[in-house]
Image (cartoon, helix red, strand yellow):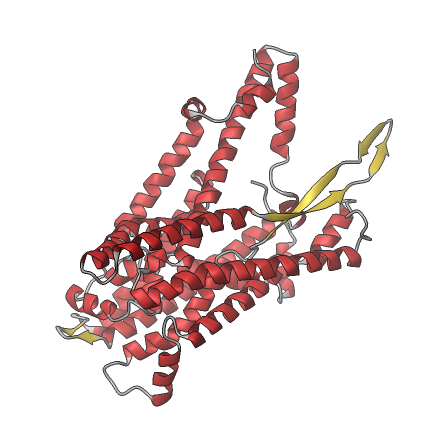
Length: 475
């Protein structure tokens, strides 16, 4: 019989996957939940003329609505049940996370462990409800005042339309929040990320068809389309490489004697990612820069102020001022969000409490300063990487009308979520292998039993050292 090490090193082929019944149930549940989400993204809200809606959104393709429609999988342009998508929940989670850094009460809850996290999650849900009501009411008011060449957009009583829109869109957002939590708990991957991922991927074929149509009509040359696809592949490769890149800081634990046994003396590492902020900086930067263009498009039927016309002219896609501000905002949000999610002082204190230290660095303030020094330089690299990834497709979008789906933000989301989901599938397969080894150890003691005990110890070590020091769940 092969040893445990040989069995684990043998990889995870189709046979190992076929035997992992729990993983297959989780995958089927995830797929079914995403199908429900896609069905809901085609159920329209009542009282809207679809022809007029299409005319209005065709004029808004380059604005903030075009970007949010991309994140919503086309549900916003169709004004359906899930038009707000999961964005209010993401905004609420970010706000609560930012508030924990400035509000002592929320910071105390964060340090209370599972009970504190559950309370913070409840606050996030309440804030999601408030944001969804506010945004859906704003959408209802905006739609009421909109009209196209075919006539008015809203076909029913204004008060009834406002009520039905608020109830429908808010209910859709709360349902998606619940669905995302169910995917996280009973499926594979992060439910919120997978919902956004499914929306982007579902519209990739139509975006590709639109790109090829530009080539057929002669708007784009065949060489440029091939070059565009090659650039997209290169961007994906760069995202995979840099999202997996990390700086590992060596952490040493001293030896200690308990009774007649000696414990400790082991070394570990503290992994610091190059891009700690994730996809938050590009989304926030794009939203802020596209707001003036969106306001100008909504006021196209009336005389726009001169200052607004000047701003929209200089902040159009591909303009030097737009690119400069886009890069500046990405860098700002990269540093800002990294400072929120990683506290060097708290991490150094937790490391000191566990008896760990960085070789050559004194515990306490010196360790915190060392973490801050390393993280600042990593964030510089991460901000530069995000700027290049997002600005290059931005130029192509502005100059050649390439769809948003080939932009840096969408590719960053798709690749990051895919990598995280594959990693979770791999961890489930490892857990299944451990279970098989443990069952065999009960029948045949000896080296297989030792392997099972080794597997149990490996399972207990789930989660990186950074997750444990910052009070996160392992997984």
